[in-house]
Length: 254
Image (cartoon, rainbow, N blue to C red):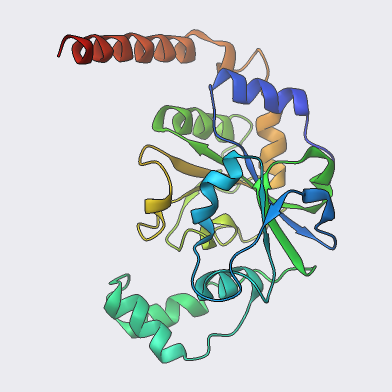
């Protein structure tokens, strides 16, 4: 995969004032270049999104078929079988209330096959340009204003005949990192972090915007001719700063 323009990505992040790390999901034979790494515990349940603060510190989560955190991720990202499918379906449909029936949940799972890694290691952490050849998807953690801009960016190069540039699908927080895309070679994006079971681990104002490598290259090619450097974006940001100042003034007076 051709490397993403680091300068272009820097322009995107700077213009949108994105302060959260851009995350990369990598499928790699060797985890060593990703140090420092952290791992889910050898036993027990751990949502991968619980590592949010670790990502902010520059660390990468190392996932394997032996240490993956929760059974949902084990199935979604490693293709591991569920020991008791009926109990799993009942938990999702009856306990969590995610589908109207276990039968519907069963059909939905069958329609969403898991990602099957090429290598033994999946790495999820801050984007690394030198590992571009192993990138599966990239994820921006953004507020609604930044999300709006990224949606415009995803549509910027798309023609009416292209596949839908931005998808909104149902799934767990870890599934949303890969599952919405039927072909990772297609430039597409997906709204993520919509799983209410995982949202406790992240700030309430953030959502995820996950993109395929091809879409990342498109976003990184946005330049001064695009909306990034036009008045609509700067006017929005100025309005937010004024609004924040007004709110801060009210707080100070109180």
